Length: 113
Length: 115
Image (tube, rainbow over all chains, first blue to last red; front, top):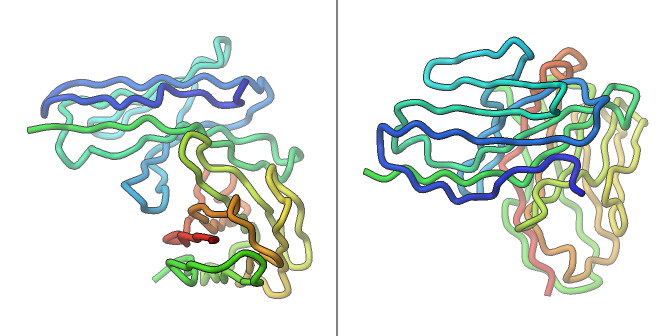
């Protein structure tokens, strides 16, 4: 079983739609959680951190459920420019291989006009 | 501009011919790491370095070497490349505080093909 699992998609949605991505992780000692965005053949970039209380950044809302080991990302009013692959990322404790980031495979989103 | 610079961006080489992919960051970051990205497997860590002269294996270190003689540079060395090392490689760096918030800065990637 992969340490971080995501639905690979692709998710094909029309402009203006609301889309939700889910992610589960298996290591209960995981310390921190993030969503990264990766455009085709380019480097991953940090989109947002994910907190237990839930957090919002404009049209993006991230949620974490530590008990269920589940992370989500909600995108409202999707734009063409949101088309990308969204990577769920989990950070191990610093004492575990330097607190490395574990990446999910990514969920591909395609927003159509 | 704060950045991680990888070179080359694209490389086609033959089996067994030693090569080095360079990585340099200008942010005085302590932590640096190499990942490879393959379809269906996502990003997997090859090696990482917590600081100068401190390196350690990641999940897929076989066939790779690294060194960290200076803080800014973290080259990836393939002593005898094989076709299964054909992949997209990313170098990443982070400060100690940046690590806590997942603030890794990635280089633009190196697409390596070994024939």
